Length: 88
Picture 1 (cartoon, rainbow, N blue to C red):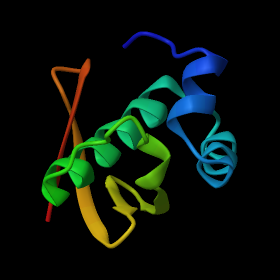
Picture 2: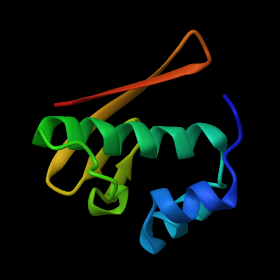
Picture 3: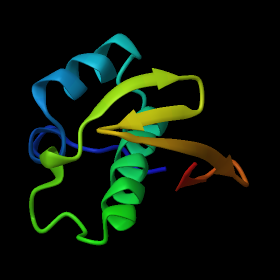
Picture 4: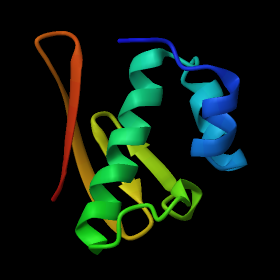
């Protein structure tokens, strides 16, 4: 998993999400899990991000389950290096 830079974090995540990530230790895996959950929610909506990923906000984290707006997204790490997510 490749480390994400500050520019990516500022574009991809709201201030609230960045605060949540800081509390989790800003680990690369957590950052990618947030992004994957947001993507899954955007795909479920049928709209994609439309250049506005902050419209899909992670509001709560419970282990490998992330809540994005009204969606519940389960995430998992595959082969120790790939993060996948799907709405449940």
